Length: 179
Image (cartoon, rainbow, N blue to C red; front, side):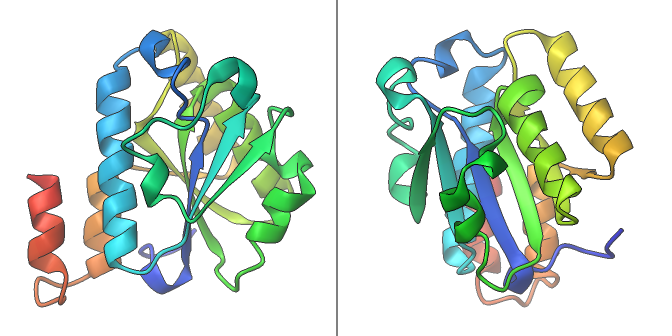
């Protein structure tokens, strides 16, 4: 396990926050809000943001507030994004801390987290920026990810770890996002 998350070593991975999926996600508005805030903070801190879209012709594009914050979006049909060579290639950026969020927690998010852990990657799962249709599925996914070796974090934890200090040059901007 790592000490604190380091912005210079992080890639933010946003799994399948898509137009047709989000309306059926439990607490979907909060999940989306936390994801957008994290992506905005990542942009301020020069953290790459990689998105995935599961069958976009069926589930629609990435939701509008999030789409412009992604550096890249990778379309996929497999539930585990790691099965897509393009996704794994996007992670060869010299950054070894992978922060994962998205939907559905118990399907694509969990399978991607497990795929990354299987490949010996360091993974943090953002509990308040993940969602499923049913709360029990989200809880089971977080429990399983933790048992497999992922660190479970909140979006606010991450942002303060990325800055480390209230003297950080982006502190005021990120604080505005949080409040």
